[in-house]
Length: 386
Length: 175
Image (cartoon, rainbow over all chains, first blue to last red):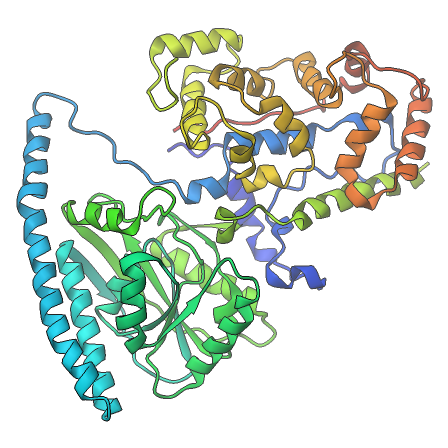
């Protein structure tokens, strides 16, 4: 793809370094988006105000038209459909053969593997869960191993080829793990190596059932995106978990939503203000084999899994990166951005300054208000000039 | 042209190109079509206001509501014609015409003092009172030779706004 000269991302990333935290109450939640957006909408200062300057809305219109033509937010959630390569007489039969192999041979094989896995898992898990009620430590160890086992079965059912780089996570107190988020399978890929406790959105259907039964045993925290008060409750639960000595290491996806594995959106600061060491994990899927991005607007999780099970393979790299601590004088938001930079650099992802939750809601009026404020101030100031 | 999800034929591309007076290259029209289909999530053949507002950068713009009135419900051809004013090859009068249309919200060909005040209100939000806006506007209009009761026509806008520094260009990313 030809990078156009007016690539909005380049002007934004160049401003990435001068992240300032606003002191106003409203902005404590997020860094100043204004630091990232082009500032040409502010008219030239220190010159006498004329009718032309008031009437000239061209910078604002240009920004709006630019957003219509291309914007970095929508790009984060675009699933890239594979280029059709089967368009000629030689390749089409080959592709048909591939479809037959994938749907006729691989898929039933995988379903079989998964079924066997579930039978083994349930036949071990239920007795352990019920019979060892008194022996908590042993029960926890066994349940952890079993969860890792079923995750391995899941990964095998997509012919998952996962390459892990870096030192494996160990369970130590006062640490959290953060990773970029592409699909719910991120969790499964990571879980097969280490039994993490995780914080998730409660899902309906069979996923919800799994969440409330099996995942409870590794320790999970639930949140509800749509509830505003929820955040404080969740923050408290996070803190309690991290400070507990017996709990499984906690895995958090600070983006808060699935992104298409080419970009990272802003990290929520919740994971970074727990006073714990943050261990970044970077995950990158190889798109040649399958696009692992779960576009939750377009497909249900079941459809997504079926799509994975009828593809050739899921190939990905997982990097366990160096644990980071908050530097003195750094705020939680700056810390979050720094870790996001580390993960994005490792996985080759571009950083964009948007909050992932804008997928579900409109931007808050305060962004528009700050533009309006700078316009008003500039006009009033230039009015004074003679 | 068929449903929004079908691919564009060469005939369609040339048709659109002719309608926008060759202000976009064929590659740019193909890119714009991909963008149009991306925004038109339900493949209706036009982009609804809600779908425009799902682009946060657009929703944050102070003039988004005014622009929405101009782009809401446009089919692809009209969408390209609208955006052609922002092409680098578009003429100055064409760009000024779009600016005029943003001000002239009732499409009567005249921009009154009240129209300008409304746009200034959008741009300054709650940070300038109506009285302040009125004061500023009367002052600069008088200096430019207009009174509070003047109505500005497109020619007046061209006279006031035309200067080599006026840049209103958007680049269409071409794969």
